[in-house]
Length: 205
Ligand SMILES: C[S@@+](CC[C@H](N)C(=O)[O-])C[C@H]1O[C@@H](n2cnc3c(N)ncnc32)[C@H](O)[C@@H]1O
Image (tube, rainbow, N blue to C red; front, side, top):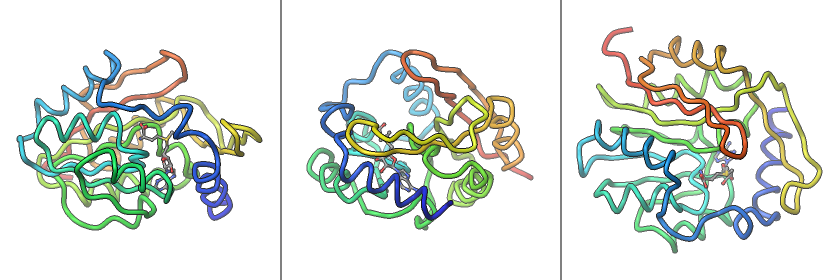
């Protein structure tokens, strides 16, 4: 299933119309997103390195971080999205899976993306993220809120798509168990349902 889900998601973003229907054209964040990104920015030294997992076309989030003088690296499994991100934002972009990234970063972000890998891999991904964070680094990520092993849509803006998630409580436990101290956990029900987490890498685990 893990391989199939990745293939389905990659094809969905490469062949569907997400970039035309959903992806935004500038760095303007909605008020809630801006609040959360600013909470991360206020804890992260200007000029330091931020990694965006599942960066999409780079807008609005990466553009916002670059505008705020951070050095941004973005990775996305969709070749189409990375081609657009390279045109949209002055950052380092490459095509790859979340797990393909190596290096150390001051902060790691991921918006509306982690729920596209099977939930049984979320624990391992959080540990991988933890290993790539420098001491005192922060994460700002979104996860799902529902107990959903795998939900498939035959037509998500023009192509099949799949999602997988745990409940809010289970997600918080996974994050804490991976070695993070949760600073903000916010359930976001603006249009879809997302759990936003701002957390700090613990000094000792
Ligand atoms: C809903 S879009 C969100 C894009 C962007 N973060 C944003 O906020 O606009 C989800 C993104 O995650 C990417 N993605 C999904 N699974 C991935 C994986 N295993 N590794 C890397 N990127 C992945 C997709 O290609 C897509 O660009």
